[in-house]
Length: 156
Image (cartoon, rainbow, N blue to C red; front, side, top):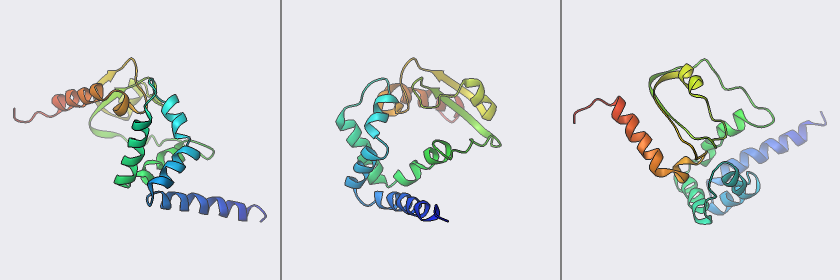
């Protein structure tokens, strides 16, 4: 019974933190900087250190689109102290494309991706990471265009 109050306080802190983060960009920057050490993640999950402007742009985008609370669910669910395993019961039937960047926090081998879905397009890059859209925007856009050109047999 002694452990219940701290657990309740921890839970309330987590829930309130996520709920309040959408209310203020200042709170979001504090949360990123303090709780998630966002600068550390931008430095360790990338090949090239982003500028301060790029970090602030990212935080602003999360705030303006109000997507931060849902964007952190996978991290809390699949990483950390009480991590669950990623369910393997799902299979993606639709055509699937996969861009592989070596500094991704959990880079999946092509064979694993092919087992989880209808992998029809794949490209491996020699650099880039978790923030590939920021680090390698031209390469990622080219990947998307190449994948769509392969699977979308629409009118020309």
